[in-house]
Image (tube, rainbow, N blue to C red):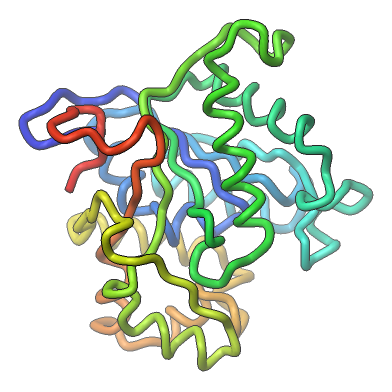
Length: 260
């Protein structure tokens, strides 16, 4: 990741609950840092490797330059076809889920990790909330020698960010989501530490969102809602991404931060 006048960070790992979260919430930042030469990857907490959404996720990650799918393989809280026979993410033992994510962190060795915020990302989906909790624990545990010793050599990311939406940044998303019967949860503006204009990478981000074809074809999921908007309205929504630095905390002048 880069900062104005600062060095290029070598790697960024995004950890999100479902296929399409990575494109909707951090697709611009992922595309930006891939274009700048950073290593990028995505861990998805739900859906299995042989599920119908894995090929779509693979296509989206290829567009973003974020490697191949890394799936924890848990079932979706609201869709039992995500990983038949597997426990739902919200029901899985916390220690097990954290260990699975620690393994990916130690394997990829990212400088920075990005995940959901504590509210569960606008709609408060329980899988989003659980992924946030798991990621907080895994980022800390990954750097500890005696935590999950069978998952590889310790690695401590430099920073952890939450993708989020401030009250002032919800804009046209509110009527769009409320019109589909969805809850809209935003954070106070002061909670946001980094706002990124991803306009130069908006076309790549939109192509990644469109790769989630099953969700684009449906009426209620956000990719489908966005696909039915006029382009100027859609651009207003997807061209800005918001983040809060959670670990080790906001540090003025620290070069290891998202570009703002």
